[in-house]
Every structure is written in C-alpha cells, then in structure tokens.
Image 1 (cartoon, helix red, strand yellow):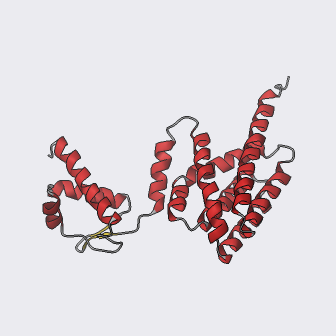
Image 2 (image 1 turned 90 degrees about the horizontal axis):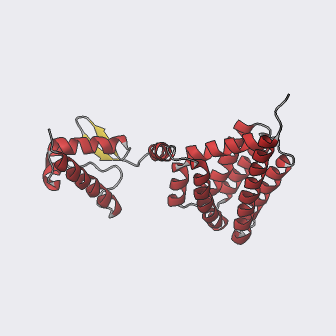
Image 3 (image 1 turned 90 degrees about the vertical axis):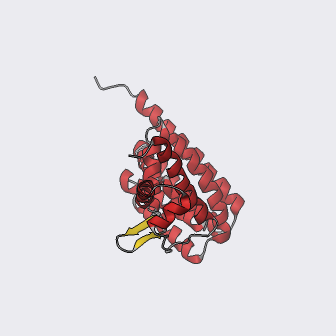
Length: 243
C-alpha cells in the first residue's frame, strides 16, 4: 500500500505533467501516451500510483484508456465539468443567486463579442430560440428551458471557447434558475409582454452589431427580471391565508 505522502505528491506530479503538456502543446488530442512503465520512470512515481492517476484522468474525460492499446489523450466532455460544478456549488446556501452574478459577468462579455463575431447561422439560431421562447411563455418548465437555450445561443455566438466552457459548466444550475424564476413570475401582471419585448430587443441589438446597446439591453433585462421576481415573492408572502 502506498504511503500517503507518496500518494499526494505523486498524484500532483502526474496531474501537473498532463496539465503542462496540454498547455504547451507537447500532448495533443488523439496522441498515445508512453507505456505505463516508461511514464512512471519519466515522472518518478510508482506504477500503481500512476495507474490510479490515469484512471482518475479517464473518469474526468481527459484520457481514453483502451486495454491492449494504451491510453490516448481525448477532448474532455464538458458534462464532466458541469457535474463537478453542480456537485460543488449545490452545497452552498443561496447558490442560485450567486450563480446569477456569474451568469451576468459571462453573458455581458459574450454579447459584446457576439455583436462582432456572430455568423448568419448564429443569428438564425438565436432567432429560432427566441421563437421557441415566445411559444412557451405560459409553461414555466418549457419556457424556462427555452429561455436558457436563448441565452446559451448568445454565449455560443461569441465564439469564445473560454466563455462557452464556463457557461456550460454551470449550465445545469442556470437551467434550474431559469425554471425557478419562471415558476415565481409566471402569474405576475405584465411579465409575458416584458419577456417578449426584452428578449426581442436583446436579439435585435446583436443583429444591429451594436455592442454597447446589446450590453445595456441585457443588463436592463437582468435588472427588470430580478425586480419582477422580487415583486412576485413579496406578493406571494403578503397574501393572507384563507379562513
């Protein structure tokens, strides 16, 4: 059995090797790793420890271990990262409000980039998501999911791998947030007209390639949407129970 100090320092050494090799381009997607024996010697770790580290990297989606052929570098599945963020953040109190702040930061930068980088295909995609959103206004679950898809399409139109990866990493929490907000505000007077107008204006600002206007419209959308939610909560808890 490995000593704990060897396990910790050795595992960190293995992870650091792969991280640095990917960053500097020494390892690329699809490449086969050295044999277990050669890699253990190169890193100065025991083969059992290396085997466990490789298994962990495989579970995270960074390696494809093929018995009899070896281990190959693979493009990680973002769903693994999403699961990690969901499990980690879900343990924090009031996490959806905190995630909302992260969402604002990501989307406001993404929409500026989208105004410059969005292709015609991107614009058609965002437009179709807007149509879906308008068709599901009275259904909190379907409407919330459509709302999330609209905003995700904007982030994807930024063509920023970093922003898209971060957004998808918290995607499960964002989707839940959209649905919960719809459940709270669906009966609020004026909410339907607001949702249509706000999302249409955000979309048109991207079509117009106007980053300042797009940023402003998006921030207004976040602020007014939050005001609707707070007003709905106040109204719900202010009602007298039936006698």
